[in-house]
Length: 559
Ligand SMILES: CC(=O)SCCNC(=O)CCNC(=O)[C@H](O)C(C)(C)COP(=O)(O)OP(=O)(O)OC[C@H]1O[C@@H](n2cnc3c(N)ncnc32)[C@H](O)[C@@H]1OP(=O)(O)O
Image (tube, rainbow, N blue to C red; front, top):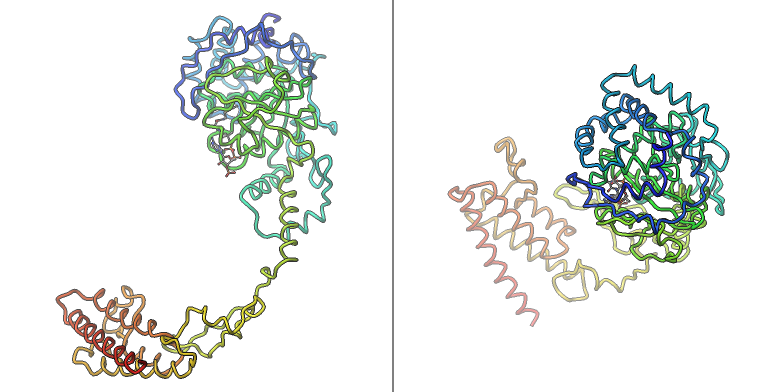
């Protein structure tokens, strides 16, 4: 037993890692080959509440691992992960060095046990349970409030999470205040929305975040194996033996997302209590649950736990190249500000990874950031209200229209609700885009001239020999599919109504746009050889010549 368990300690970890041979092809990670710290500069094993005697602890032999794994494989948790990874894992066993023989035993036994069925798995379970119960050195991580991590499901948030309605140290958020903020602000960013939704799931007991280590508790071991399986699948370039070793190493802790008693993902880290920093070894979410916010919430729980329970101020990690973006979004930087003597020689070196650092804020309510963001939004919103009226929403303009799109009543610009309040004055008319064709200041006279001009053009069109197809709106009874194809119909009769209303065409361009639309419709619906198409072309050139001569005579009068 002693020989088996000793590989969990630092020297053996280094020795075994000297010949890692990750031969997997990469699906989700870039090459992430370990180049572990050698024995000579491996730091003394730091005193930690988790580094209890490994010989008498809960997991004391590969037999234990085998039986747990067998049971884990048989459970609903991550059963697909297991089945998918078994073949490569077995194949990979050949690559392992001698120090990994225990892991090979573990893998083989797991396969055997899984094949043997539930019966043999439960026999193993019983054995572990007995051993665990008799083990006085089993270390259990407890929450600051004294409850055990990974407690029974349905008992509310577990792990280091602050209970609902409470707040993180240093920040007091009363429930009522939270409610007001929540109700007042309707929209929240994607970050807050995801955090809030997961927080609600936690409060409803459907989701929990637990932080635990290899403590021998039956349920915890199943979860750890489930997490190991996710790591093995999501980090295909990482030797599986190495993953098992660290996840099961008692100096490492794992924060896990558990949903319906299944592990969704997690982060395994090693807290260096004396150095006040932690090293994130692995981080992954199961494939079909990625980019749903679990990774972010997981990291927030980790930070809160590491600060409040472990007393850490920083995290370091060798981030996989593909995951650098994720770590940046979690507040990690490539610049390392932590004094080198606090971490150098402690953390493991990796090839192909980028060393990143995250400073843990001493006050931030990491598991309730969405409430804090709401409060900040509320404060900014109130300040804006003090300085401007942009939050006031006026009733809209009644755009109800009579036949031919003519407004039922004329609305004076100055009567538009909110316009004056926004600082508009009538002398700003010149900035309006609804300008009459002439630069004259007498709008009424200009409108009369415009109407007369449009009336004369319409008469000229109506009198033309090719006008007959355009005099009336197309009758859908005659041409059933016409309005399926022509969505913006126009005809001379409708234009005439608009001209006579003296309200519709406030610019000449609006009138011309209707004429052009009428001809374009004819050429859209009809093919070029048809009479309708030819009529539209001839009538349009007639219209253009009339407009041209009409505008020339207007110009002459104005000169
Ligand atoms: C030390 C190490 O272990 S390094 C290896 C890290 N692990 C892996 O690469 C394994 C495969 N990937 C995963 O397991 C997951 O995608 C994780 C752990 C990287 C992220 O977990 P998720 O649940 O997907 O993250 P979450 O949904 O909270 O996303 C947070 C943000 O990061 C972004 N993000 C997630 N993964 C990545 C990525 N690989 N690269 C860049 N951005 C990412 C998301 O788009 C999201 O952005 P947004 O807030 O602007 O919308």
